[in-house]
Structure formats: C-alpha cells, structure tokens
Length: 138
Image: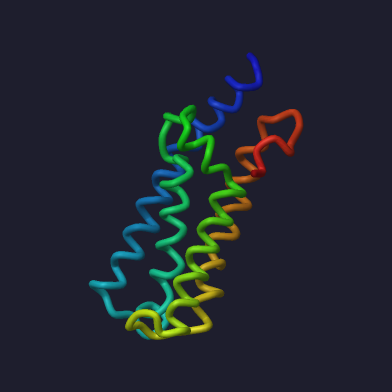
C-alpha cells in the first residue's frame, strides 16, 4: 500500500469520530441559546465550541472527500492560523467598539482553549501517515 493510500485510509477511519465531535460541539454551542446554565455557559461556551466545530468543517475531517482544492488549502496549520486571526479580530473589533457588543478579554482564552488541542490532535493524526512528518504542517 502506498503512502497516499495509507493517509486516505487513516483519514477515512477517523472521519466518523470527527463527525461525532462536530455534532457534539455544534449541539453544545447551540444549546447555549436554549439552556441557561450560568454566566460561563452563556458567555464563553459558544466562543469555545463555535470555532472548533467550524475548524472540523473547514478541514473536511468529517468526510471521505479529502482530495480537492478546499482540503489542500485548509491544512492544519493554515486553518488554525486563520481561525485564531478571525477570532482575535472579532474580539479586537469589540474592544474598539466597531459594532455593538461586549468586549471580554477572557474570550481570547475561550477561543484557544479548544482550538489549540483540536489543532494538535488534527496535526498529529494527519502527519502520522507521512514518512517525513513535516509534510502537512502548513
């Protein structure tokens, strides 16, 4: 079996687990609008789960359709950097009152609290099939 087939098989093997994670993150994030479990729940859970479920979507981790322009562009490193930049940009816009919202410096921690471990897991799983482990960082 060649290296590319091995990588595809690994991706396909983990796709259902990523899909389950996507559903759990999405459900938890959306539940913040329906269920009131306190200030942390209302103020930070969606900031944690929203970027994480979108990371899984943008990376295409939940599907077996892995060889296309979209998934080649959104490598683990590139996706992580884009999402951190967007999240921090949103929080920066709140700080400068560019739109009506409440700035909360703890949101920075909320954004990276799940995105970073998710990125590291994705990076580990996506590089495991490559002989040269630097092949897909960016």
